[in-house]
Image (cartoon, rainbow, N blue to C red; front, side, top):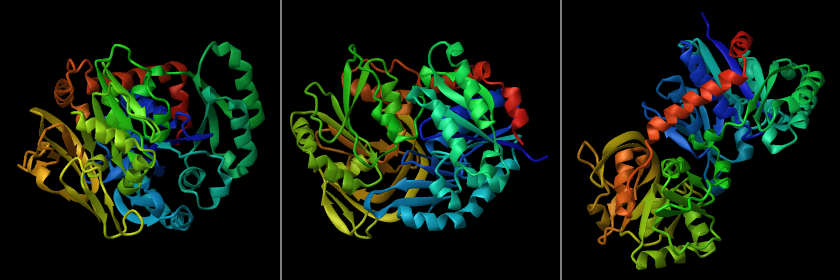
Length: 485
């Protein structure tokens, strides 16, 4: 018997589609169904590595976790990763397929639909229910002709759609009714109902609003979902999440400064630190100055290392970092941040634009050469005397004298990363380090902290369970399952 399927589309980006799918995946899995998440096309530099050595959007990895299964490249067959002047890297079924500008990508999309439908078919063959997430807005009629992410996929696969609007940003009635007004009637016929997300206050006050939307669109009102505060503690995929930093922690004993550069990637490396009640993560834009009471500077990954190095210098933040290091401060670089800490970053093949060599911060005696070959794998090992699990996702090789003092040791005996002679500057290609409680505790102890206060991984599981219960209370899951086909 073919799997049922239901697609969650939105009136815009960041309306909560990803977390609704994650919560529904956990809820239906708890009911005994075999659930698979699926997103035809995604755009994000926050990606996850799959067991078979591919990559998918971070949201689909979280949704797979919610469904109790390992992530697969088929859960997100097309992933776009913006990388500066050269456009975006197009990842198809987990592997780099091409690099294309936005305009050129429109011409590629028709060829990619076959890969999308192939991946969808593979998931449908092993599941009772496939929960599909759309991308951006369902009303992008200017892109409809070659669409594979929203209605183009829904029409091709015959999947019914639930449309989600976000009342927290305002204008939810206009956004839902406006979507009905601009989309093609055949697309509108695929929408079986709507959900209003992130409501705050007395639901009775919006009953007339739900009735108005239903009357003006002809779609069924499927639920008013109250704001779920702990959603902010789940790994985010959209860089928009970085614009809403966590609240200050007056009692924090460790203060970590993190420059947020234009091409930042894998920023969910910050989530376990944000979860610590005694750690304050301060997100700095390039024009900001480094706070005087900083304990550690952490440089995150980048999809365009050379461009982000230029951004770091353009407003002078590199001066603050170098002065901080000279005063005995600690600096850690992850992946692209590791590359920035070195003496040079060479791009002989023009991976990030014109071939060139850029000067790094010079805090580590290493040199990086970028290349087209991408390293994607899950890793485990030991660093700072503690075990960790993580993953590598990078293009390029880094070597030099400081790499003779590795940051980590992997089970195969491979030395990984680099540490300065003074021990205060370190770089590693491993993402996901801080999700390991033992490693995070050792890292914080080196900063004079009191160790971990949060069990990160079990905390994520608890939030997913509570999110599922939240949706069970405010959506009719039996009706949603009936609407799926």
